[in-house]
Length: 561
Image (cartoon, rainbow, N blue to C red; front, side, top):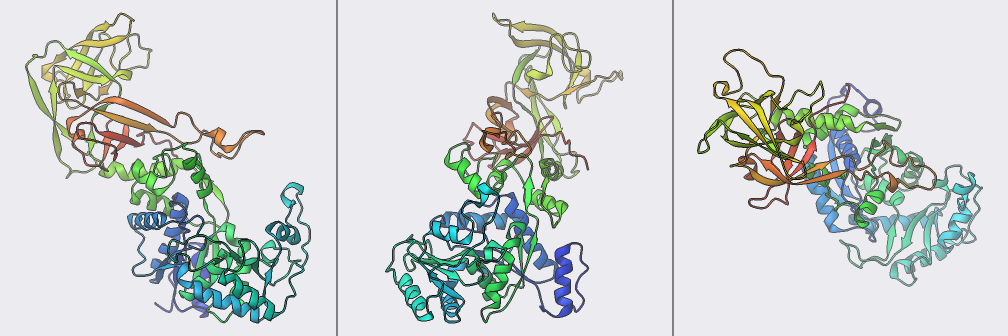
């Protein structure tokens, strides 16, 4: 690394530049420490990309470390899911994959060292009694934080504490019988320093260590030491860990280990979205969504299934930047980033979601032809494709009105419009069923307008997409909207919960859309712009002859730069 740090463009880089200039650290080493108890969501993306981006900016190192210290909730399924998501996102930890469980023996030894130094003790209070002694019992309801008081077990001798702690490890005691606590200050204004719990007894099978351990370190003990073991210089955390930083520093200061620096930045909050694994898990468990990969979920697996690209997510993360204070980002910015990315790469196609048959009466019944359609006007190298055309077509039901208002310029009786890539047509007759519902339009076309222009120079005010009825592939199209009705899902009136803000119209399923033939042959994950409708991705539920498409985002971009 150069002796002169690269110029800073955010407060984290300013801190790091100071550390490098002052010689506190010689290089930069960051990490991303997810807990494997769920799938990553868009908020985790910001944290991962921030840590990875900072390391790459300084030519440093980046670790992926799983914080697997709570066996009651963790699973190898989530480990594999996190790694797959991060690779897809472009985050590269090279050969530096670690787990907090790699360090269980070292963590235990350091806990014993704290005991020997009079810095930790075994407490036999119950969980409720610990809250009461800390001064937190009832604080939320009363709006106060009563002073804490020492546990009656706080003055156990070093020998007693070592004996009890070793017997805890040996499995002599039932869950909850004892805990190991740091001996700091029960009157400290920061509750995290009121003799925090460092170890607890819990008999659950660990997905990596099996049943080798029945005591497990708490996050606030394992996290700083794991950073230290790995040589992490800058532990970049979201803002909710700011109050935990004094404990992070206390652990490192009271043990003979390398001392990283923790820096906090604002977490991502997104409108119309909840970003907590606890709440997302509730949605999954209560079957309010189809799973972690439901395209309405803000998880990466859900967003990938929705059609989001890693490029769009990285662009979004870069645009929102790194801030010191929490705020709520408009989800329209995320959607805007996706549109910009897909507009340049997605091939165009025609799909009619709510088909209305239009019969061109002066077009020969036995004739069909192919017309050239541009694959992507934003990409001159994308070329063109052939689209079949025949006497009977499908157009969108919403593109026709029998008695149109003044500003409706699409098809109506006696009106002429352009069919995309094809001809001008004019509606001559409306056919209805016994219930008065429109079932078919009788139209005429002008053969001289092939390709969409009239030799006599006449103009039309609307261009419609269409699909040849004879060649159409029938498929399912899922139209997704925001999962919640309000920008802040937790803003609810008294007596309601955040679940009452769920959007009952967040999914509309169209079971019989008419699709351009090539859409029936697309591979899973292929993304298209359905002209005039939005961007869509071929879903894994597709079967031969029965494609399924998810709408990624609409074409309209209401985001204001």
